[in-house]
Image (cartoon, rainbow, N blue to C red; front, side):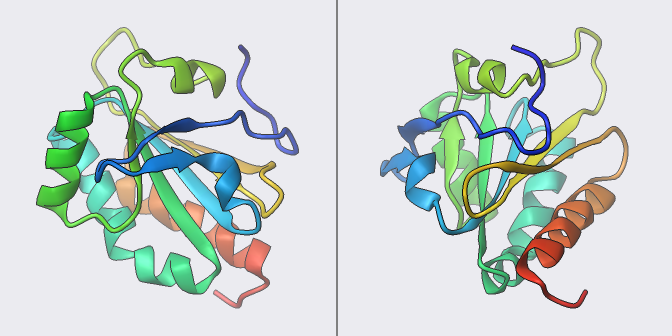
Length: 155
């Protein structure tokens, strides 16, 4: 599938969160949602990105949003990673990459940093697609800026 475009309805996500609870993206309708994809837990760059989202999670919640982390890890690895990092938001394993494929996320053949994040509006439509190669800080800040605009908040 080609990458999602602004205004597209986000594909469904059904799975199990890192803490064993069932997860359905459609259950989050009415909230702003940040979905970030990362290739593997416990790698330096993915850990930094997760920590940045974790550290800004209270701000994201105040804007009426939530965060969902998606990786190619196993359920057990997701659980261990989320617990170690003190993550308060759902993290969903995508071992078969079916979620990434539905969102048009392709991991590079050559090892390099790749961040892909979608911000969804309250109706579950793509409001922004963020892609950064270098700065996790800029990446997370960009997602929060989109949430602020959607929420009508002053940065």
